[in-house]
Image (cartoon, rainbow, N blue to C red; front, side, top):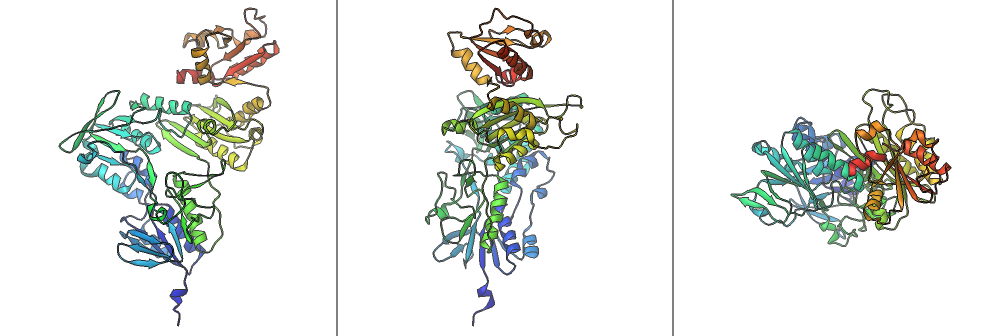
Length: 556
């Protein structure tokens, strides 16, 4: 006689945190009768890894606040057999069997959600030192905070200026620590375009962070088990503690060794059902790739949003459902002290490297009306296809409202909207939240003008290259700000001063209408009006400096 339990669909989930519990809970919602087991090698089933930097400073008050899902909740509410501190050490795909530290189990469907591991560079003397740690897991948090380790450290060095590294930096500064941030690349937050990386770095340095870029640490100076300094080409950094945040590597060897298809960094290839190339095995979270819906390629997007959605999709399908996770396109956001940096879609570095044609426009505009108290500007740069206007990407920086605008632009990208569609969006308006012409609407106006051929601009980086390398001096620059503005700042090299409101009446005999003519104001709007007036007066090649003097001054 066949036992009823033998007829149940057997689902095994390997790994906790976000993707695993999401998969297990969705599998139960999909199939009440399935036998669902979850294995986690650690004693905590799920915790908020993204909250760890904020728990260091006390923004998140207690360690317990990080423990977002208790094992008993999964056991009692979802009838999931949760096995903590039981590590899966091998998988046999043909036999549909897993081996753990305590036994062997058979499955009909397997969901692999074991995440990624911190990359530890081969640094000389690192094995001799105890005063360093990654900052990704609850165990890392415990090491950093146990026995007053962090309290005793006056200076902390962060290695790696990605999302986690920069978040840790801010929270250590909030604790009153002296902080050095060392990054191997040419700027912080490499997901962003170079200007926006510079905005973030300027903000860090304004708050007292020492930032060292283009530097790969090769050795630690260690005495009695403690790192006391780090040699770099710039200087010797004296420090009391080191936090390692140079990147992660997908933890996939158990399946890649069995032939599972993967991308270059080892992340498992999955389809939109989150199925791997191995039969009846799904994967989600930081161990899996997902489809980039803009490039149509497998991509690695290790963020909690994708872990949860991918886990949910894997759980549904493993339990007999039919759901698709269509993918992502690198939407991200980070708080850098009082500022926010956001992005979505493709960035210029990627598009240039991959020969993707694009146009770009930048606007600086108020996140709220100028008459409303504490009005703050937001900088938005948008990238779009030159022949169709389809939006390809967007980045933003400001003190207020960045999250809202990036989410709107992300939605526009998913919907396949063009730059001309932006000005037709019906967005929420009230003075505490937005001007009547929302920054996204303004972006649509400006980029539509450029897309239709009625406007052209030059970026600060392009202008800097022109000033540095153009020895023929076949250009002219006009500063259209008023005298008071110039007296408080400076004019660009070689610029002549002609206020906007005088251009219409002047004959401009000292200017060559056939030369490249670059106009600029403080933020861009008056430069645009000057652009139109000069074109009307017969100037052949006019460009407005995008973002005006404000962007130039932030960069140079």
